[in-house]
Length: 65
Image (cartoon, rainbow, N blue to C red; front, side, top):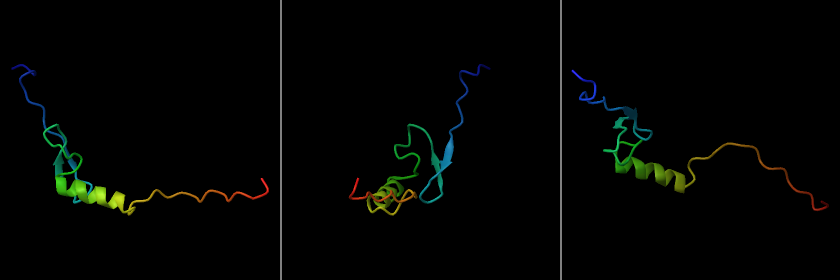
């Protein structure tokens, strides 16, 4: 048997929104999400600024400089 004819196993990842398995292949247009619903929920969280990157406040500028 040739390895060229053997189909590759489909890689699955965990959906970052709901935790269910999601196929990581061109057949899943919503990857890394499992569905359009999970993708839109995540997009809404970014749009409403629910996700934030933590960091320090920039130093205040003096009026004298």
